[in-house]
Image 1 (cartoon, helix red, strand yellow):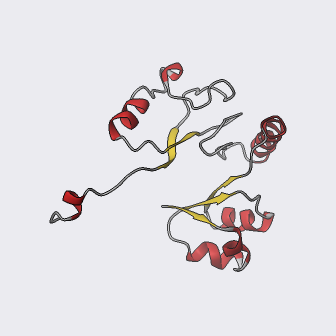
Image 2 (cartoon, helix red, strand yellow):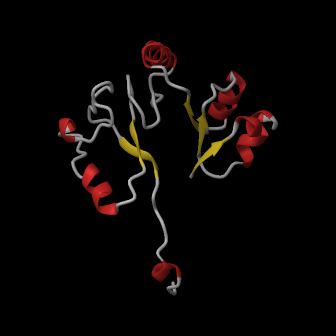
Length: 156
């Protein structure tokens, strides 16, 4: 389970206790670069974190390249996801967001994702994003799922 927390929720709790009481194995952190203490304890407790910050492409691109290089120098085994579902610069996990409410077109869009044929994969904003290069591919935010009236009234 991936849980996304608001900034206030994290800072109002003691970090190790906050992490230990969470459900699941991962934490999404939107629009805030969290303090080092949070990530220190997350790493110490074996907790996967993912951060997302606001995007201004040129300075963002330079910052991402720098952060990826530092991360890989400090811990070459740690996977890097540079941009949750948006424009990738340098990433070990290729992620996209897709809020298509039509299950047929949603499935068709990702039917060509194949690490052996990376050029065939769907890339949002291909004019500015790094291309897909065969790394793990994740639709990490999706939407439009709904219960029909018939399904909601059906017995399990």
